[in-house]
Image 1: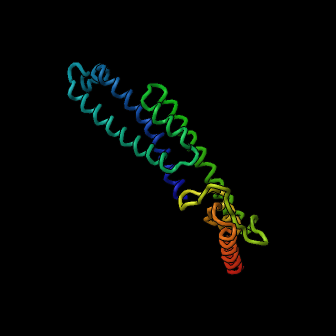
Image 2: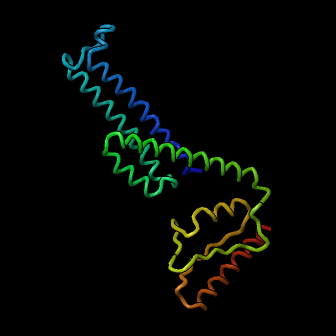
Image 3: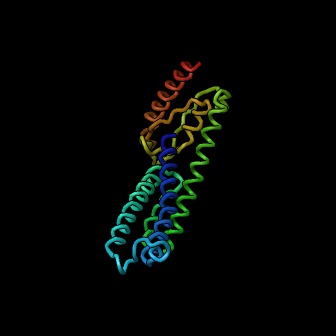
Length: 204
């Protein structure tokens, strides 16, 4: 759940960015036009006090930028549901007025749904952990198709093995290049089955 916590924190930062940007814009518009001076004798408008409002605008933009970049980097680095498409569109639309607001809304909504689903899934898995609903009589050896090779951070099966193991299955994903000789592949499978059998015996 560490990834989800970071992702959710990034989403919260983006929502904070949206609300504080609106508040900052209203504050600056009223101040620059001299409304504070007219209403309660506050600071003059930008015509009379340009340095005063330029400094405040600069500080406000700097703070908002920090909030935004913290949020967007966390979301981009941890969200799985955004995918490549929304990430690329987010970068492109970030330079287009109005479109960047629409994309920010889509990103926040997509990440929010992902966080909600992941929390629900984790809670459900915890509640039914003792049931071991995915436990099978024999271990499960997962072997991918042609022209693919599993790596530590990139595998053919995605989240499927983790979900099965969380619900009682004994899983092994063999790193096999299927273009090798059949004899070599079969030996690799045999080793995989042996390891699985030992793991299952230990669990029993």
